[in-house]
Figure: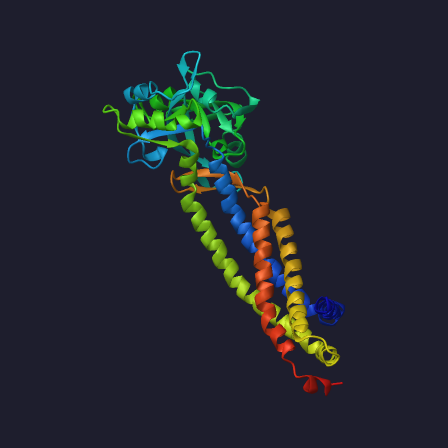
Length: 395
C-alpha cells in the first residue's frame, strides 16, 4: 500500500506540472493521434470491403462453378449441366421446385458519379428462383423485374455510386437494353453493387447460347453441403467444384484485404517511429522540469520504482488520450463513408462503406499505449537512476 501511495503521489506531481510543458505534450498527443487516425482509417477500408463481400454469402447456400475456376468470371457451365445440378440431393425444395438457379455474370462500363471515371460494374443474369434463394434481398424502390422481359433491378450501392442506372432509366450497352424498374438492398453486401436481369436477356445480348457461369443453390440445411457436393463431384457427367457461398466470398476478400492491411501497417509503422521519438522527447522534458521535485521525493524516502512507474504511467496516459482522440476522429470522419474499389478476383467494382469497428478502435488504442510505453521507458529509467546529490545541487 505504501508503494502504491508513493507511486500515485509522484504521478499526480507529474500531472500538476503538465502546463509547464504543454507545447511538448501537445506534440506527443498529435503524433500518437495521427498514427491512430491513419491506422484505423486505412484498416476500416479492408474491414468494410470484407464485410461487403462476406455479407453476400450464407452458410445454407452453395455455389457451383466449373472445376478449376476461382470466380464466376472464369467459370462456364452448359445449360444441360445446370439442369443436372438442379437434380442433386441436398437441395431445399419448395412446391416441388428445387431452389437452385443458373446465373450469368458479365462486366459493363459505367462512370462513377463522384469522378466521372469509368468503372467495371457487374450485371448478373438471374432466374426466378434467384430471388427466392436470396430471401434477404428487399426491393426498396420500384418493383421486381418481370422475367422474360428486358426489365432489371439495380443494387442500392450501385445506384448511388454509378451514373446511368437510376430507377426509371434505360441502360443501353451494345445490344443489351435494360429498363431499371427497381432498387434492391442486401444487408449492405457486395450484391448491392450489381445489376440484375433475366439471364436469357444476357444470353441473347452477348450471344452466349445456352450457357451460364454458375449455379446458386439453397441447401436443405447447412449440413446438407456434403451430400450435395459429393453427388455432384462424383457425377461423371459433370466437372464442377462446389463451395459454401460464405466460404466462396470470404476467399474473394483475401487479395484486397492483404494489400490494404499491408499498406496501412507500413504507413502507420513509419509514422509510429516519429510518434515514439516525440513521446521520448516529451517525457525527457517532463523529467528535466521535475528534476528537483523527483530528487526531493527520493531524498524523503520515495521508492525508485515509484518514480519509474509514475513517469512511464504519465507517458502512457498521454498516449492513451492521443489514441482516444485519434480513434474518435477516425470514427467521425470515416465510418460509413461510401466508395467503390476493384475486386481483383472478378475485376469488377465493389461499392462498400468504410467500417470503423470497435475492434479497430481497441487495436488503435493498444497501439497508442505501446507507443507510450516505448517512448516513456528511456526517460523513466533515466529519472529512476537520477543521482540524488546531483539533482539536489539544483535547489
